[in-house]
Length: 178
Image (cartoon, rainbow, N blue to C red):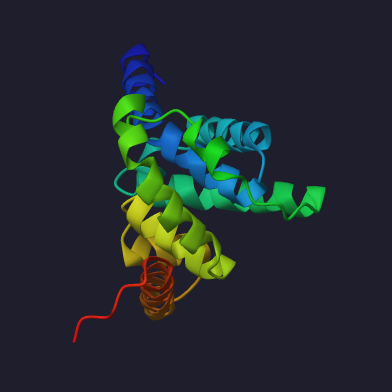
């Protein structure tokens, strides 16, 4: 590999690291239930990216990263035999490009209601909803990451959102729109 292509690959990896480190860390922390294990999982994901040919990943980086991260996090979870989900405080400690802590504090109350309702959904619904709305992935990308059909992903998201709507309406004593 020439010096120029090594610099190109290093810049490409750096850009991917900047974009995906926070989202992958939050995703892995949800699966492993432990921030330190999640950091290890994300580090291993990026080590694998460095070993991968750019042409094999270029154009579908998010799908590749989340798939590798998911498989490694599930391996760690199985190895540890721990099923304890990470608490919301742990997830908020993960680095990201989100707004300042002051801006986040204003939304914490609403977020805590939604996160609590989300946490009451089945794990498969939680996972696809998080991949869709927290990480902005398409149904196709989620399908490839989770080994589910796109139809199943859509069904899980639809059912999960209905469940969230029901739980939040009940919590705030709201009537459904007619």
